[in-house]
Structure formats: structure tokens, C-alpha cells
Amino acid sequence: MNSLERTSNHIKSGKLPSTSSRAVVNSRHHRLLLLTHISPSSPIKEIEYIHTSLLPDPKNYHTWAYLHWLYSHFSTLGRITEENWKREQEWCDEMLRVDGRNNSAWGWRWFLRLGRPGAEGGEDEIV
Image 1 (cartoon, rainbow, N blue to C red):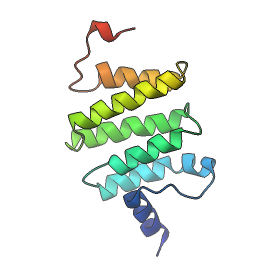
Image 2 (cartoon, rainbow, N blue to C red):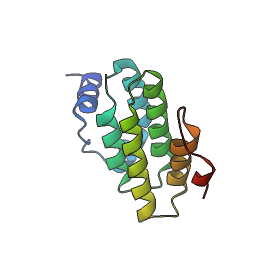
Image 3 (spheres, one colour):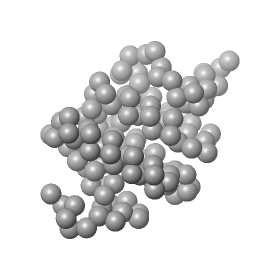
């Protein structure tokens, strides 16, 4: 099995790699390219992977940017449901409950509630 097949299987299974966190961070661009090519019917396993990978480093800008790309890309393909958006908002709120000084989480919260297509937040969302 070549490297591309191993990585493809890894993405499909949703299992975390057994590499250092630096190697995981550096793999974001490769994962983006592979997901674009593979185009799974549901990005949920990758979203779970991102959530898990943010646990040891919750302020990793590159991981948050990758999460934003993932939701934007798969939303345009119609593969993100309103239920997915709702669960993501709940997850983001929990991230902020744990650390209210996480600027990346605040930026993500803004996108989820005000910036994304179909967002229904109003002026009461601006805190």
C-alpha cells in the first residue's frame, strides 16, 4: 500500500495518526488536497478528527483555518446539514466555555452565527 492509499484509508477511518503533533499540523494541506480529491459523501469523520486534534493545542490557527475550509467546501457541495451547523455551534460554545480567551474560537463562533451562508444570528449575537 502506497502513502496516498494509507492516507486515504486514514481519512476514511477517521483514526488519528500515530505521529507527532507537529507532523499532524504539517499534514493539513495534504489532507485538504486529499479530501478535495476523494470528496467523501460526509465530512463528519474529518470534523471529528479536527475537533480531537484541537484538544492538545486549542489555539492552533492552522487547524481552525482547516476547519473553516472544510465547512465552507462541503457546504457548497450540500454535504453540511443544519444539524451539523447546530452541533458545531454547540462544540464551539464548549470550547469558549473552557477558554474564553481563545480568539480562534471566537472567530469561528462569529462565522457560525453571523458569517456563514444561511446564518440567522441577529444583533443580539454580537456580545
